[in-house]
Amino acid sequence: MSGPTLYVVLVAFGVVVGVASGLLGVGGGTLVVPFLTLAVALSQHAAEATSLLVILPTAIAGSLALRRRGVGNLGLALRFGVVGAAGTVLGALLALALPASTLRLVFAVFVGLVGLRLGLDGLRRRER
Amino acid sequence: MPPETSRRSRLRSLALDPKLLAIGLGGGLLSGLLGVGGGIVMVPLLVLWAAYPQRDAHAISLGAIIPISIAGIAAYGVAGDVRYWQALALAAGSIVGARIGAGWLARIDERVLQVVFGAFLVGVALLLGVRG
Image 1 (cartoon, helix red, strand yellow):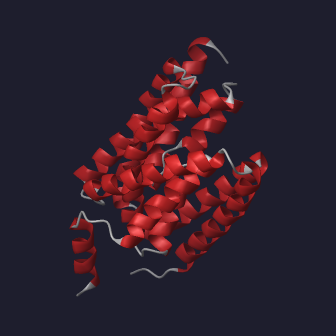
Image 2 (tube, chains in turn red, blue):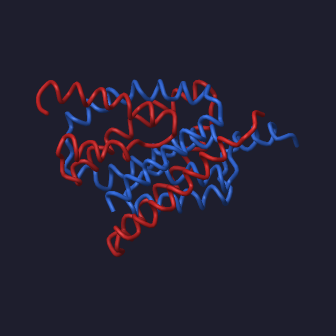
């Protein structure tokens, strides 16, 4: 892909990422990074750096829309996020010293189990 | 205290209780360590451990991603190999999409939300497993 086609596809994929982000409260890096490496053929490093610049405005736009609707608490979320940012820096430092691929596999299994649990809970839950 | 009142007062308070502190630190640590998004870690912990309602957990996670991604940009983004035009095109779409998604989050049935998020996590797990 190149030229105008690439940019049309990028904007369209951006809309999908934004909807997932606003609805699910995730940054969207999980979708953007594989897309940039597989479909746009960026290196992993370039894809990760670029995705951060997409995640920030997306999270701001979604959070402002949620605040207007009175969902959650943005002040609390921002404080919570500052603690999270400290953890992220520590984690990035630790990643340099640990075998990340093994950890990632363990984590994948864990995320899958949590997803199944949440999904099944949701299916079983009665209307309240 | 009826549940609705306790939920309100809990959300109105800006103080971080110990569980929120632990989830922030632990969730951030895992996402920095594994290179995965914070929301995938934070939302399940907020719901399953800190007992936040599903909808609020997603909203809090999204807000928390703002400072987390700022820290990420400060750490790697500036030094990294950023493709500005491609980021701009993606962001142009995702800002529109985020407003649509947030509108859905405000209205969606919490059970449906939980099922959709569960399916998303299973998908992420498969993706991570393939990537190894």
